[in-house]
Length: 496
Ligand code: GLN
Image (cartoon, rainbow, N blue to C red; front, top):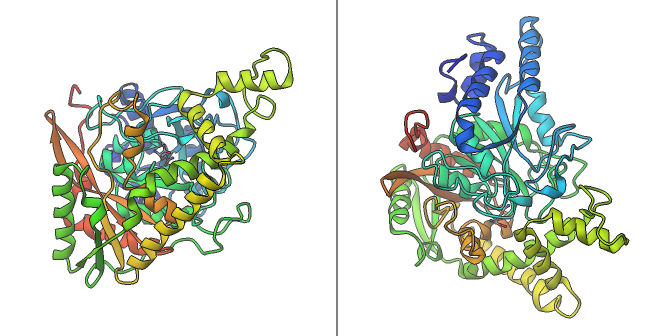
């Protein structure tokens, strides 16, 4: 490995510090990241596009600026990756779909610009399920990323490549998007930290829309401290998105204790369907938090069982409306069809969308159609409210809720690909929080053994609306007492 020898082991904070204090250069770090990607990504498929030349040029100009004594940013020289549904001027943003092949946005999303303004260096765009619909990366029109802990398994989805890029230590952080769990579930399956903020904490301007009332930009990092740093850069008000909250950027809490925190343990999340080994690790993690001074309170979230059906009405309804714009006129490679306008649109959409996206457009159009609207869509909105009410009631007597992130460890690529309902159920523990708009983190909490492989397990910590900093504090305290996140899978050594 060339360049900065310690690079893959460092987290963003210390890496930026090391670069700024001239113990290395941004160029050396970026070269180390690019070398690692070139050597290992052919086996992982995290990246759709690697921006080698642009990253090198940017690193050089950061080094020059530092040499001249110009002010440096908090992420000076830190390489990062973006999910391919995020707009960067002139860089292909294809959403894992053929219908956006070659689409280069004319602007850069503000949450990306804020990272660049702090000195971070974009090294590439990552593979994802088409339009973020999926839980394994297999719905991509390009490639399904692999899990560095076992290359036969998925790193989760839909933010598969962004997750794999951090888990394989190509980059210290990346951005994904979480609509129903697409950052928390992969983080759990690949042994890293994934955080979905309170809805509205980060602007959605420049994030290609899937389910607009659910979508949130959500980072992946290797530690909760890094998560606090990245969140403090990308969160905060933005006039381009009317659903973005008019709040200052997130400020990490100073406390490094969980003493006195009341943790709600929802019985619905420990029911049948939860893998016994995952359960054991999550219960041990909760025990650790109690050892650290927190207390547990049994709680009930009685509408949990309706979350998946409710999500698949709300999310598909919104998707069917959002995806109407891909018509061969405004975006996308055009197919002539029978030569009529309708024929051209139909042929373009038939060729451009994959089967899962078509399934969701059909479902969403159905639940919004006159005659079915009240029975499906309006009813789902009512149940969504009941799910939020469950959480609001719980948070009257607890400070945080703790539970598993995913009912199982990473599953095999191909295992659920032909069974959409089994795939949908892998999000049963992340979807309720998305419907309720609440902040939730997945933090590594242990391992299970499957077919001779060690596979990570994630603990999910959920907070009340706007308690993002409290959620991250609890994750940080847990992490520094356990160090699960320090475990790494040696891709270089193993023949997996
Ligand atoms: N797996 C869920 C879905 O397929 C969630 C996706 C996401 O969060 N983007 O819709």
